[in-house]
Image 1 (spheres, helix red, strand yellow):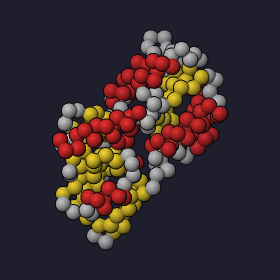
Image 2 (tube, rainbow, N blue to C red; image 1 turned 90 degrees about the vertical axis):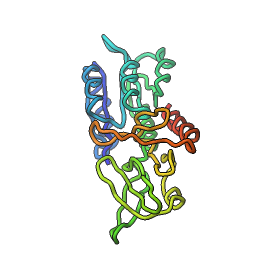
Image 3 (cartoon, helix red, strand yellow; image 1 turned 45 degrees about the vertical axis):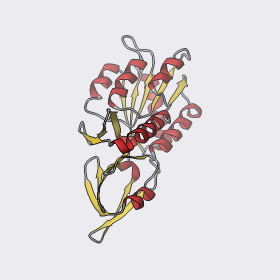
Length: 237
């Protein structure tokens, strides 16, 4: 699985340094897009999805904080790393659930620990969810799965683009999945990595492209689900 990274810095040489460091860290793991125009990045948020954002804070007509606020409208929990020459913005930066705050110049010693944490948070090295259906064996990364849909013993496994099926009791399913999955309804278990929006009685999750799916939250799980979602969001701070 490729980790899609958006770097936004209006000084090309600074953006290039970060891009080169990321590719040196692991070129086979990352797909990097560089934006020297912050408004171009904001425009593409409507149709493009990224797993990690690395943002400068100071631009001529907008701040990195405002860019982060636009990102948070689309994605509550994706990691955002700020890079800047000034530490005076730190307090404001962390109000948008900042994952890390790096002072320039950006070096391996500063960036690589943040990338290590990002990989751990996104579970790109996560274990597999394995299952069989019609005598065929399947193996999916937990991070690929958007949500599970239960109907008695029948389980629909929804990724961003494909739906699989297996037979499994709820307790057995819960014992097989990692801590990023949250039960929001008797019939639905959602991957917190893919949550885009939380409403009073539903969750909106991201699918491929600009598609989303609205998943109901039942009264039984409402309080516990909201607490768990809030905890997951705080993990990126």
